[in-house]
Amino acid sequence: MVAVVEDGWMKEEEKQGNRTFAELLSTKKMDTRFTRGKSSILERPLTRPKTEVSVSAFALLFSEMVQYCQSRVYSVSELQTRLADMGQSVGASMLDVLVLREKNGKRETKVLNMLLFIKVNVWKSLFGKEADKLEQANDDDKTYYIIEKEPLINAYISVPKENSSLNCAAFTAGIVEAILTHSGFPAKVTAHWHKGTTLMIKFNESVIARDKALDGR
Amino acid sequence: MSRQSNRTTDSKKMNSELFTLTYGALVTQLCKDYENDEEVNKQLDKMGYNIGVRLIEDFLARSTIGRCQDFRETADVIAKVAFKMYLGITPSVTNWSPAGDEFSLILENNPLVDFVELPDNHNTLIYSNLLCGVLRGALEMVQMAVDVRFAQDTLRGDNVTEIRMKFIKRIEENLPAGDE
Image (tube, rainbow over all chains, first blue to last red; front, side, top):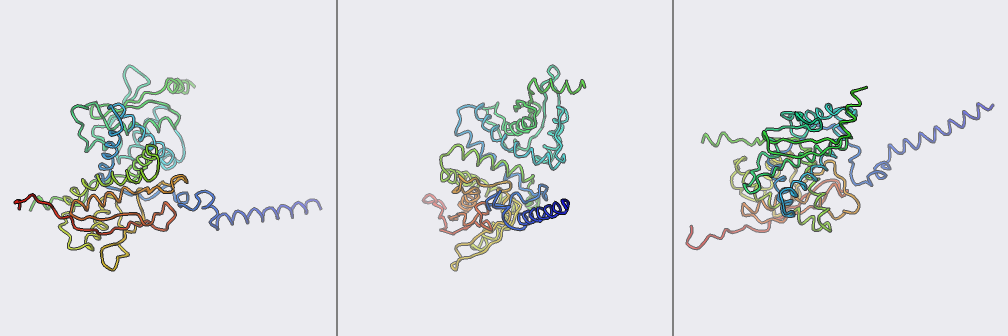
């Protein structure tokens, strides 16, 4: 008797549940609730056919960005900081989608694997090729280098003599810094003219300490 | 002749996502730097103009397209050659005005707005306004003054993205007196 009542109750509940779910799926409610009908961005698949634009278009856009930043700063280092800030927002947006697409949502926990993820996966999707080299500093276990002989970013940039230290790959450095930091590997990344362009990655002490502890287990 | 034939319309290509996100980073920065959307729109148009002025040279060199006979031909070249070459898309040309001096470019996929959603406090932002500047700048360099604006934008809930272009006048080159 009791069981029958319970059954009936369950069925009622189930029906209710089904209806709401079906409603959500079939009507536009889902849209309006999450995107207020502005765009269908959440309904699009994460993996898409690869679309391409011309490198010239990118170069011209990037050049305008550099000029714009330059008009609002007083020194080369400020300019590089601004470029790096913009890179950070690119890196932060890129990280989640890359982890889902390339790694099935699995995050790296070891420094070396994380660096390889950047050298291989991140570079391939951003620049269409792996980074040329990944090296560790001889005298410092916190410091790593990603070396790119001819970075795409710098392909059409000639640096004026009076600002010879300027390296617009500061933008790429920002991307890498954001990806590392948001993955739980806080680091400072800077761009330098060395063997082409070298991105110097300096991890926080804590990152290296954690990595060693993981090794010890 | 041999030099001519070496040139191709194939410029180097890259993944559009870096381009899209870089543009996004730029617009975000402009929104931080300027107080209101109108200023950002203006700045985007200005940057686009600067790009257009430089881009036309690259375009003419790669496409080996000569002078257009009329505005209709210009419209076709912009849609089928220029957009294809730089952004990898081919907008359709429609809605000609009876006088033939105004048309619309309908963009089905605007690579600039991948991943983008406008927040509520930026409802007057014309996100892709850079494109208007590019078209205006590039055409000015081939002696055409045009008015370019966004008529519809999927980002603001419209079904399509529509760029409206209006021919204003031919720019006469002011040659110095006695210079032929």
